[in-house]
Length: 320
Image (cartoon, rainbow, N blue to C red; front, side, top):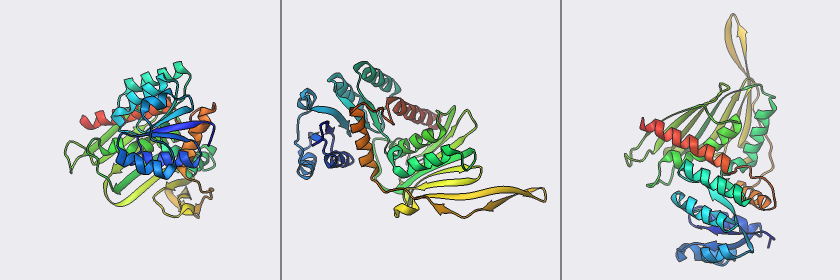
């Protein structure tokens, strides 16, 4: 086992994958879940004991707490963990209220503890390479970004599709932009339940003129998970819904020339970008372990609050 041990709180739909990843990294010290039917299979798979939350907080061998419970419980669990001197990793969204985010950030800073948010795609090797390509400027200035997350998948009843799907896309867009938006507009519609949007779009505008669109739905006939950046001389496409790893990141060169006084687009030869394959979730969990050793989180509380702020502004825009 690793010297730094983590307890995972909530090992259901997604938490079981987090527990598996920490176990494979040799750092899973315990799992916490009051539902025995959920906890026992994960304990059997990982070899980690099922423990009470109070016992985990009191155990000095547990350095970090990873929280994968319902979003409305994140604040209370994270606050207790920080108060007990633990480093904290919270699945997205960080919390549901900006005031709660501010309090957690302040609490973590006062305690000298890590507060990290689970924006998984920021740790995807292909997105990280995409970001490097954009920032290098080799294809000219960035002009426009759009990100789609669509599928015929699990329909939530406690949150709309924007809050369920879009945090990943917002996190990627903010990383690409390197700033928070100056304006956010959004539209949404609920069909299955009129009070919960199952289709939503958001538009982000940035101070430097960059525009970004985010589209989400869980009622799509086809699974689409892509982030697209359009630059002066190429479009960079990260298509995570592509099954073959080597075809997930592509560069489509182009240029616009003037012929006869009219702009004419010219296509270059598309090519795929080679990136060593690695599991994003395991990379994210490994980064949290690095943070226990003193590294700064890539997706810290401030980044989590920035994503939350966009979600809240988009929600208000849909209401209006």
